[in-house]
Length: 98
Image 1 (tube, rainbow, N blue to C red):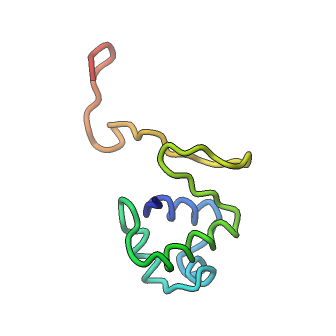
Image 2 (image 1 turned 90 degrees about the vertical axis):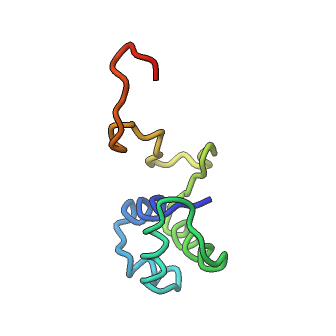
């Protein structure tokens, strides 16, 4: 499943603003804004999500699902398990159990 942060990251890698992605996908800017605002899996119409994903793929983006392997050999970024400190949580001190 595709998440809002994935769409934002893909757009950033391409250097696109929301308006340009909306144009490429044939959807409205508010649709892109709603998709990107979701912290988890993007909801909404399957057709709309397909259009956005296909526009990103045509532009050279490979969206990788949780636990999936990358198909290509291009450069990219993949989100690993975010550090607890990044999420505002305390991490155990060195040597302590998690």
